[in-house]
Length: 257
Length: 266
Ligand SMILES: Nc1ncnc2c1ncn2[C@@H]1O[C@H](COP(=O)(O)OP(=O)(O)OP(=O)(O)O)[C@@H](O)[C@H]1O
Ligand SMILES: [Mg+2]
Image (tube, rainbow over all chains, first blue to last red; front, side, top):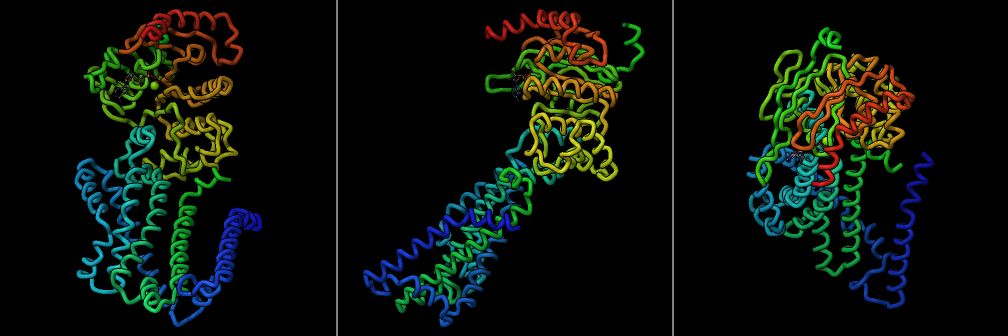
């Protein structure tokens, strides 16, 4: 336990060090240039804004987290399912893949008004926007992982007369786990972007709504504080995915140790 | 010799197998005409130059590839497609990297939908036999190439197929490990009373292992000759120092020389 902790510290202390250095530099810069707060607030002011309950941080972050996590979970489940589906047969792939590529090529922000018209104003359309932003890498990574396999593994299963569905379940899908998780990590970041984009297009609640309010009254320190919140949510989701990966793939860790 | 042969049952009979692959430049004939028989309990080695169609032939026997002409009979019955009575070991160990050693050995049981627990003891015995008992909870990535190949051998023995096909299983190993594995394999073969059809392009390995060597020509594969290797069993490292052993390798080199030359020329 102690060893693990010190190992973790060893990994992150260069980053913490750099962070402290940058923030310190920022603080000094603000103090010596005496720059106006609405242009660049000092880190201290940002910290104070984080503690200022006028902004109702927990209430706002709650909405944004639901959008991010909801969108991500949808993207993960639909993405994995679709990724497996398009590798099941050539016909399915030829039918579905072009459609997915087309949908993915549309800028999600341009879709946002549609979802708002269809789904109303609030959290739901933003979940959908987060989902549309995030699902594509999961599909592609899952499909690649399931498809690209050592042919000997397939032959091994075939020689035991294992039916196709079982080969998928027991051989191809476990074999694809590293790629699936790589896709999920990319998608976790995109879900954050999607949720925030959705809030910017239309919403009265959420961290992007705070940014817009703060912009209106030039409360720049609150914008920074909201950015801190967003990155915490993003890192939290990424960390959760990484943790799940460790649980699902204990065999991948032995290589590192 | 004749008399002894007729007393034993033919496990598998190949008759006039022909196989061509389709390619952009039209069909490539990989196997022209191959016939041979393997008797129950035999250790038969197929040798042939690189690219002559050895892997193709094994995959056909395993039911993993279609062929154009000929017939294959297992215990007198025509087969088409995979049968569970034939196991296959590949050049690379082809283990499931997300499973521990013991679960890899048990994976055929799981994949065939049988009860893993009933076979656990057998799996552990096999690991014992191949000196892997201490590694049963490791993952394949934690093992050396030779150890991985041993796991793959255990995996093919656990569900007890009568015939085991081995496609250059030790080709990727260094010379010393390879010799050790050869001796180990002969031990396993003797104890398990399996029939083994083994592919290699190493003539010393063929002579050391085989009851009978089937020598294939360069592509498209035809049978050049079959040679019975009557060296005493059990064979040990010292077998390789015997004059008789040298005579067999000599003969095999003579036989294959033409093939090596055409390979260099082409
Ligand atoms: N899927 C395929 N499609 C087309 N041609 C193939 C295919 N697989 C093999 N061949 C061709 O068939 C011939 C025989 O291949 P095979 O793999 O059986 O040879 P091999 O004797 O096992 O060679 P090696 O000793 O190098 O393993 C080769 O010339 C190869 O190019
Ligand atoms: Mg081969």
